[in-house]
Length: 364
Ligand code: NAD
Ligand code: IPM
Ligand code: MN
Image 1 (cartoon, helix red, strand yellow):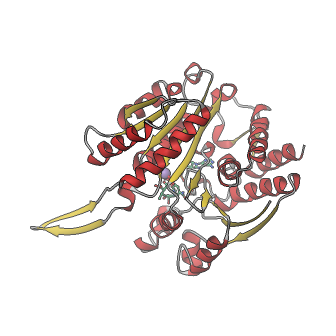
Image 2 (spheres, rainbow, N blue to C red; image 1 turned 135 degrees about the horizontal axis):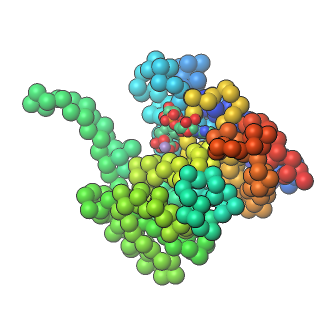
Image 3 (cartoon, rainbow, N blue to C red; image 1 turned 120 degrees about the vertical axis):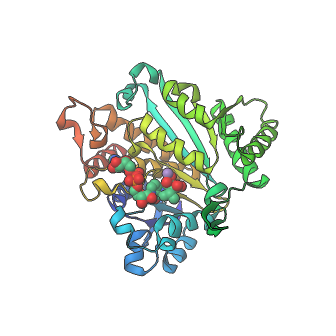
């Protein structure tokens, strides 16, 4: 297969983990006889400082011309971010415009922790049961993130406002994808909401219930988001299957899921659009550990696996990457973020050493 791939390294640990992901990509390219053209482009806070924009025109063109986009996390430490005007900060000026541009409405964030790796979780091992395998699907281009933002004053009182809107079409398409995944996995779907308070959540539930009628074979449970946050810690296995979440609630619960399995470094993601998709870790640029070669590249390498699976429809390649990652963990190797007391220091790998071991395994 021939593909053009845009690569946005991002900020902080971005370049370090993207480097490992590209190594894996190249190993897969050779093994399966593909031809990938990789076009690197500036994106994020660094791009603001070097190009004057966090999502420069030339990067837009490179992304437009690509079949798929690989994106590292963006953002810098607070003191550096404060030097950037609000509208050019990478969250508002780069990530959201990227999502909007390609309408990447379905954000797949798998939460996987096999039983054998239960010790990664801060929970007691028995709570991980036979392992965790939750596919969180987060709506990514609607809701409060994209509503009108206002700051002003009325009758002498200053205020700020974020509008939250969902259209029927926005809910229907992400619900369809979530039900299709649940059907494919032959598993339950848990719909998360806040319908006891929010009109958008009540509307969300109406549409989800309507979509559910087309999937009589899929069991659909509903849960309030606050209870879901509690249950995720108390009894996470009940959610094995698909969880469907709106944008903001999905943002929060997917980070919580990272905590549940031991690290945000274990959270890859794919952002699926109708024509173009991109992949990125669920976490940020981790300024606290940037440049130290200790970040966990799983989230970025796993995002490459998701790219093969969900964007390029190459499941064998995806499986090969997952197998390689879990083979490395299976030998007791981990990265710094997963270290617990008493862990054998010789088994703690740097970012690049982890990438090397995954590549070695893929090469066989
Ligand atoms: P963060 O996700 O960057 O980091 C939270 C914690 O998790 C830190 O302790 C960090 O060291 C750790 N961590 C994250 N990824 C890791 C990895 N791969 N390996 C090991 N440890 C890892 O959250 P933050 O510090 O609140 O945000 C930093 C910046 O990133 C902010 O500017 C934020 O807006 C931005 N951000 C960007 C994205 C994105 O690009 N999609 C996502 C989230 C946050
Ligand atoms: C994420 C991030 C982004 C979000 C921010 C940085 C805009 O937290 O991808 O989870 O809130 O969606
Ligand atoms: Mn987030």
